[in-house]
Length: 205
Image 1 (tube, rainbow, N blue to C red):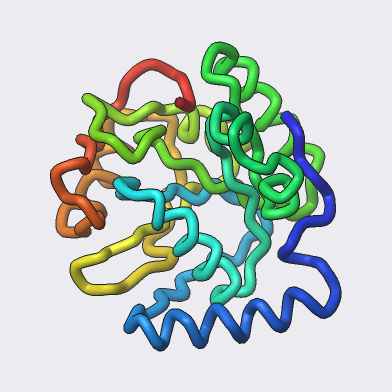
Image 2: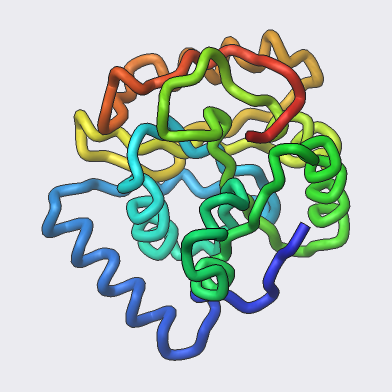
C-alpha cells in the first residue's frame, strides 16, 4: 500500500492558507462542520453516503476545516486517467480491487507501524448504488485495534464532518447495526444512489 509521507495536509505555508480557504468556502456554500474528533491519533474514517464526485472535494474541505491529515483510499482506476502525482499529493491511496485482501493486511501493518494515521474509506466503494457495503474498513479496524469514526456528508442539512465513534467488538453484525442507525437519516447528494449499510465479503472496493 502506497502511503506518501508528505501530502498537501502538512506542506508548509500551503496548509494554513488552504485551511482558511476551506473554512471560507464551507461558510459561503452554507455547510456546517461537526467536530467530534477522537482523542486518538489513529483511526478509520468512514465516508458515507458516497453518491457524487463532489464528495471528494467536500472531504478535502472538511479535512482542512477539522485540521486533520487524512489519506483517502480510491480505486486505482481513477488514477489511470487522472494526474496521479497530484492525487498522491492530496493523500490518495490507490486500491487494486482484485487484491483487496492484500490491501487489508497492508493497511493493518501501516497502522501498526504509524504513530499518526487517519485513513478515509468509502464502504460503498463507488458513487453508484451497490447492493451492500464492503467490509474491508471493519477488518482493518479490528486487525489494527483502532476505532472507526463515522464521517458523513449530509446534503439535506448541509452538515458534514465526524460523527460518533465505533469501537469494533469483533461482532460485525452487531456493530453494523449501530453504524446503520447512525446513517439512517443522513442524505447523500443523490439519495437514489445511497447503498444499504449491510455487510458483504471482506473487500474494500
